Length: 115
Image (cartoon, rainbow, N blue to C red; front, side):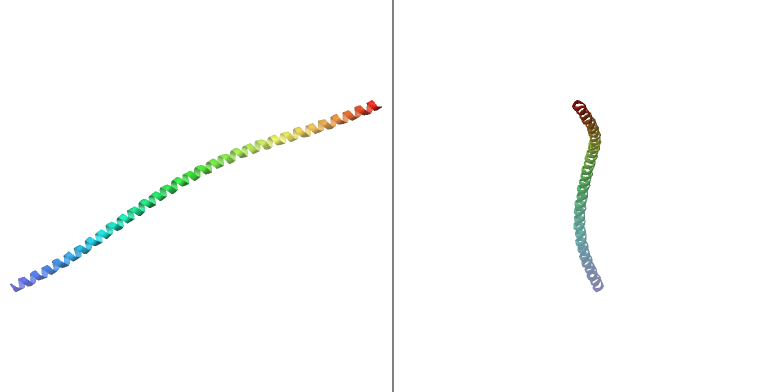
């Protein structure tokens, strides 16, 4: 009787203790689930940010390539213009020489006419 009663009371105390532990474990598990959900949200936001940055980097690279192409074209045009300028200068020098000869011939002609 009395021993059985004491054993029953002891078991009830143990059951009570185990129930408290179980409730604490459930609360911990709930906290862990909430934290895991938060971590997933942060990771998703991070992935989205990374994706956005990658797209921006690709766009900047494309802009850079376009600018490089434009610079190359402008450089080629400048080189062609420089070539034409040199050619024009040579033509101009040639015209000046011809002009001097003509002036010289004209002056000789005038002298002969005067004489």
